[in-house]
Amino acid sequence: MHKKTAIWGAGRNGITFLERCNAEIVFFIDSNREKTGTEIDDIPIVHPDDIEDYSKLFIVVAVADSKQIVESLEAKGLIWREDYIRDFEWVAGSVATETAVEALKYACFEEKLSAGEVLEVYHTKEEYFAVREQHSDFLRFERSLDKLFREMPGHYGVYRGYCSCCESQSDFVIDYPFGLHPGFRETCRCVKCGCNSRMRFMVDFVKKEYPKRDISIYMNEYITPTYREMKKFFPGLIGSEFLGNDHVAGEIVSGIRHEDATKLSFADEQFDAVVSNDVYEHVGDFMKAFEEVVRCLKKGRKFIFSVPIYSLREETVRRAEIDAKGSYIEYLPKEYHGNPLSTDGSLVFTEFSYDIIHFLEEAGFSEVHFVSYGSVECAHFGLMPMIIVATK
Ligand SMILES: [Zn+2]
Image (cartoon, rainbow, N blue to C red; front, side, top):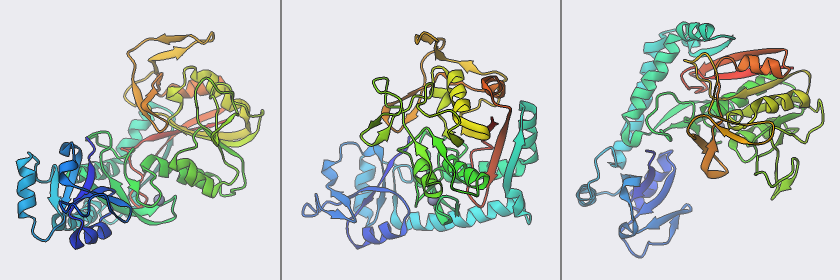
């Protein structure tokens, strides 16, 4: 489980550590009652007795003499490197990680670092597995990174690279927000813009696809880092969220535009591009939603999006759907994914596979293909994830 990082010691060592680490710190812990309730750099200081659950924390002990504090943590059942670490161990670990990552690059790619770049186009399961075979060095590199970072204290580490959203060198935080899964599609967040691996790739891909930025794009997200970063490059971008069935498509609710993917409020042929990240698996009638994208796109323009593709299967599985009459029909037990607007998460209606190409063609697209990607330099990871490009 993903833990929150806290610094034990709101003195000189704690402040020095805060400056050198790239971690997100939830609070300082300090037994000096006079400091309780005050802040350092907007980070609150709490008293050790006021912490209800130590198991949710990863504690960095940053005091000159840590013996007593470490003993008290061990008395609480906390384990070194799993639940706590000393500040100098963390710093030494960061230096060691950087060296280890460089060594892995050398081991996996030798002199030909260009092999650390992947951008492949394909249509079928066979072709996808051929791409994986062709880039087995890249996959080996990412699996080795996973092996390295999962062993790090608190299962947390930093990877250096170029952020295509920030357009500068940055640090990418690798942690395990959904447990110790291999593949960094949902992690590797830039410390500057907050975009994870799949978000940064999507922004990068759309930027390269449209070097002329004065175009109209629609994205069915708004309160996300991806929308914010895209808007920097494409001022004509329109974003929306689904705010529930009580609202009318196009309605602005507290500054957020509401849209329903199955009945968009936009005009026919309004957009030069439609971009979407992991939304259509949550739409009750995805065919209707794809037809809506076709309707709103200009002819010859593209729908660029991601949904989880079940790469080992041949066919799409419907867990549930909303039929033409609006009735909810359940085929398989309910499953949810994370949703920035709701702690309940979003219900998964569809588990897509390669036949999504046929659904999109049926909806009216003339050409559809998959793109797989990876980049050592830009930290585009995810064990060869896929996006879909459909042209009207
Ligand atoms: Zn960034």
